[in-house]
Structures are given as C-alpha cells and as structure tokens.
Amino acid sequence: MENNDFFNVPARTISQYVKKRGLARLRELCGWNHPLKLDNDRFSAIAATAENPWSITGASVTGHGHRLHSEPCQDAHLAQVWGNGWGAVAVSDGAGSALRSQLASSLLVRRAVRKASRLVSRKGWAVTNKLPALEEWRSCAEILMRETSQELPAFAERKKIPLHELYATLIVMIFSPHGILTTHIGDGRAGCLDLNGNYHALMEPWEGEQVGQTVFVTMGNGNIRNITGASVFNAPVKSFFLLTDGCERVSWETLAQDHLTGSYKKRNKPFAPFFDQTIKTLSQMYATLPADVVAGKWHNYLDNGHKDFVTEPDDKTMVIGIVSENPIHRK
Image (cartoon, rainbow, N blue to C red):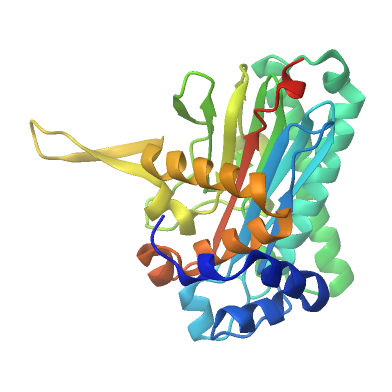
C-alpha cells in the first residue's frame, strides 16, 4: 500500500470518533475535504471470534467524479456471518445514468443477503457443510436473483419513482469453510485465494460493446436466466473479495499482452501483488486494532491511499474476507 497519513492517526482517537461522533467527525479528523452525505458512502467490519472464522472488511466510497458534482455514492455493500462459518456478501453498483440508483443498490444488497440467508437455511447447506453442485446452484441463483429483482418494481411503485432511475448491478457471494457460491448480474469482480496460494476469478462480468456498458438487475424482462451468472468454488479458501468496477484499475488484471504479437487480449484475474499486501496488512491490523478502526482505515485507503483511487471518477466498493489462522477454527 502507498504511504498514507491516515495510518499515523492514533487508533484510540479514531475509535473514539467513530463510536461517539460517527463518520462525519472522523472525516473532519482526517482532513477529508468533502462532506459526508446521507448516502451509501460507509464502511463495515466483522471481526473473527471463537464462533466465526472470518474477518470481513468492506467500504463503499464516493468517486471523484461524483464529488465534483456533489452527487451521492451509488455503490452499496453488505456482509453477514450466520453461523458455522457460513455467511453472505452482496455488492451493488448503481448506474451512473440512473438518477436515484443509490436507492436501488442499497435495497438490493439488503434484500439479497436476506434471501441468501433464507436459501441456505431452507437447503440445509450450513448444517451438512456441503456445497450444492453447479446445476443446483444455477437454479437457486436464478430464483434468488429473480426474487431480488422483483423488489425494485415494487419499491418504485411505492415511492412513485420511474424504474429506469433504479438501474443497478448485483453480485452475491455465499461463503463457507468449504467453498464459495457466487452469482451476479452486471459487471464488477469477485475472486478468492485458495489454500495453495493461487488466485481465482469467480465471475465473468457482463460487458457490452461500448466501454462501461453492462446489464442491470431490472433488465431480465421475465427471463432472468439470460443475465444471471453463477459459479461454485468447491474448496476452502484463505480469502475472498468482491468489488465494483471503480476498483479494477488497482486490483485486477483485465488485459494481458501477447509478447510475440504485442497485441492485448481480455484477462480476468486478481492482481496478486495488490491482494497479497492487502490481506497481510488487514490481518495484522485485526490482530491489534478494533474492527471499526480497521474498517475506517480501509475506507480511507479506497478513498485516497492509492493514486489511482484518488483519480478514479467512479464510486469504489471492495469487500474482503480473510479466514482466521487461529487453531480453534481448524477443529
């Protein structure tokens, strides 16, 4: 990670500000020159415990372009751990062209995680500690995405908002000690680090012919299957991560050069140096700092801890889960 003055702020001071006065005062303390808005710009953390083997750190940060125009953060995220090492994360990227897509992304992540929890409970996967086969998961993922997408038209009708103002993408990951289930509509990235130190992409983003073009949750037109991706990673992992496309430049390999021809082709692979350092740093932080302090530092890093994050016009969301190395979780 690049040098960042935020990391020199005493942890106790940060924790006191977060707990007593909230993120707005934390921004003031750290010298952030943009005001906190009542939108999705936030951070979150779940610390590992004796019952929970995961440390999960997330942040959604308003992009440079949105700040210039005093626009809200249209990204959103939510993570939960339910028990037995199972849980879910959802990340949503509201369309920049949709006037109130921050409402859609916020609603989608909450509804998706709730429906994922009910699905796992109904199927008994966390009891048997066994992931479904890909075909079963495809069917379940399609239902999960259809039911979640149906929340938006109902919300639009209640609030009297045109549906085209609520376009957003959605990535949902169900994680466990034994592997990962992933489903998505639209772009963004999801991946993991396996126990052998190898990185894997867990989804292929939907991309149109034009730059930045993708599909959104409400575009299923009655056949959500056409736009729903699904994958099963049937092995334990050291870490997982989900991100919106505002974080791609720093953390993902999207192009690879053919050294013989000099031409470039698309690539979909986590950028190992970024995640190696990030996983190491977050693990060290959780060993000595409260979870809310770690999350505050993570939010600030996505905000201005890397030159490409500083200049990124789009909103930025990244959620990283790291399995604890405590021997109690290996029983």
